[in-house]
Length: 329
Image 1: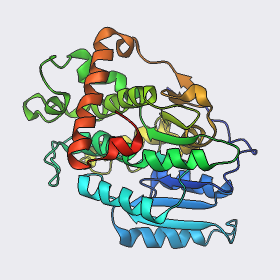
Image 2: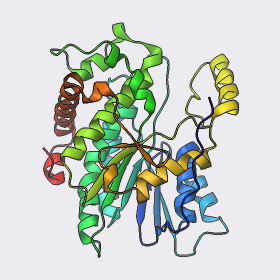
Image 3: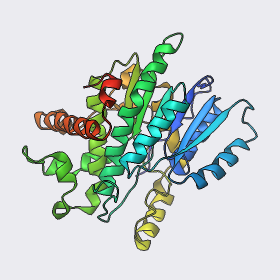
Image 4: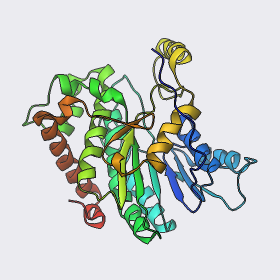
């Protein structure tokens, strides 16, 4: 089934005077999002990579763009989402070196079908990278985003936007709910219940519930919290799959997927010019996608609150004072 077209970004979109962060900016959607921000006059672009060496070469390529304004700053930071210490160190360094942060686009993620455990945290890797580290980073960056909004004249909300997926509706946790007495984090790390094709959907369900719950604790006139689904895009997200699956994936992408340039427009909309009505919501082709019925049910609401409590507890353990600094509890 063909995907609906994504309109070009409005010519009026202008990020002059803005500082923007894009995680996973070295390839695919992240790289394309960086190009859009640069083409729309961003003053300072910050992007992250897993290895600093690859980041500098990409930074040099971006600085060589003929349309780039001479005063534009491009900064590259190292960030490994499989490690809490890397997330905390990155956020600390960013807060120390960057005065303002108007937009945080948390794009970095993975797609695995094999059971893999982070050597840094002991958590299952997809859960660690796609959900837990992104949630922790969101909370660590929140004080800077809020302070930036409060300093802006006239007052303008900052953006905290996380790449999600409509695939969240296919999570095994919807079909087979986690028992009330079982922690969500424990369920995500239960190898005996491991379902390869549900890993990605599971992680994106957690992202969707986190965004919905975080928005309840945040005034959208200060920080707009949202997420978005770019649809199927021709990227290397599935680079770690087996060769036959990669070949099959390329065939499907060739027939159905959007280019990174087109898919990333959805990211820029959410993390740049969507209104306060997008607070706590998921955006798809510039429009809000309603929550599935399960997420609005008593069962879904209970999982959402449970997830928030477990996430807050984890952040308090590894990064004490984060919630106090963010004025979130």
